[in-house]
Image (cartoon, rainbow, N blue to C red; front, side, top):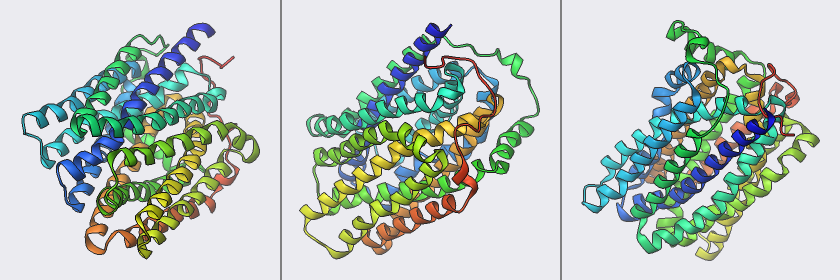
Length: 420
């Protein structure tokens, strides 16, 4: 039983790592496609960024209910295959000269809709594969490989964009999702048949996930802080793309290296996550990370406002991305592991989808606000706004019961590999 569960985790882990590599590549290729190939305006850049998150607002609660009704492995397989198709259409339409901003937005809405179901399923499937006392370790391993992918992926992405062009480079991400679908399809995991989950009123089921999230003593303030954080983070990367690719005129390769630096830092941070948990506990680790985000972006706001030389500005961006990567690597395993530990398995899909839905809705808002702010008042004020919103997220977490939260606050035992 332990051996088969360990094999299941390894397959899930490998699938996550491969798709993370492709996603890291697209993180470079997509902004280059929008800003330089399609020559989008700042507002259009914000709209494209928001399009990836809008489906969460529309489908988040729906996905949560159905993921708790359906077999989560099957949802992941079909969602991965569908995302591959959506990404494949981008270069194909570009080749026949049929790709513009409006078409790209439609494809990203399709991709984002499948992403909603995929995330709810993956977050809910992991506690069926590993025991709840090993969730921090499992999430740390997944985040470490994700960070490794984000180290190599952007650098390779920048090179591929320069060699093949942004649209064709996105094909690599499409292939990664096909590989993920194949790996997940071979996964052996014990899931209750759909009939055993029960069939109740849809609205009632959706309310259960929402109520658990909103009424939980520590999960509620953590969720609110995370929602605000997503506004700041999405705005930050929207403004970053415009600042780096348009005002500083960096090459796709250098732009990819920015994300590679964040990936290296994230790997280091994820490696330190268990140590920080032992030292501070889950809640205090998350709070400390939230405090670090505005500190990372404040120098960038100063650089953009003072108009220093391009070389100094680029160095400042590398410093900000490095610090962002470190704290994200430390924080994310604790946030994911804590949420999975305190939420009963029967509603984990709905709780994950509820939180993810709100997070991505706030990200869509942040991306739009970032583009609109740059168009209205410029890059420097937009970065100042980013720092302020990051600080608000830190204050919400810091003045909450999250300070005493830890992974020992487990909701229930679960079956699966215990990591031994």
